[in-house]
Length: 166
Image (cartoon, rainbow, N blue to C red; front, top):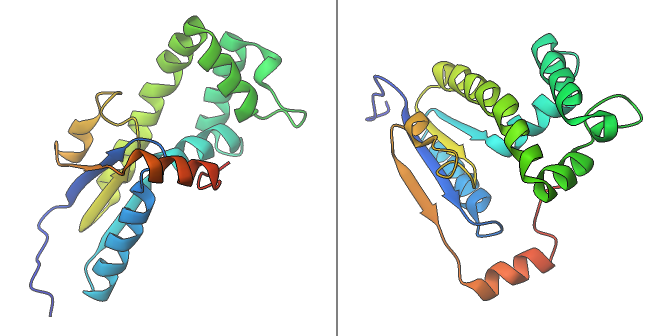
């Protein structure tokens, strides 16, 4: 019998700089929860974002992608007609107006998706994203925050070693 009786999910935002070990911390916590037979959900916001941008078989996702094409142009479209994440990144990180437009379209949709996922989650719920504080979304985790930090040298080693998803 589990001594932890979750009446409602315990949500925790896991955040920190790029390549500081957020995913490692999350996977270790997930393993510990599994070992203790605790209900656990990990929501990797970068994975959710990628799914929204790449999966055009979900009508809502396809509509959002079309809105991005209308606003930002077909230059962000891949040969297959999906959002080319590399081209999108190049555009929004080089042009502040493009970033503003992208954020106005994408961020509210992302929040709705995350709220839906959080509403279905049980037990311990980790919401992992480097930008959760910058995007003012800590409320999604009831303002519970784990800030992950590592020494700059280790961070540089992780970046140089390709310790990042494509």
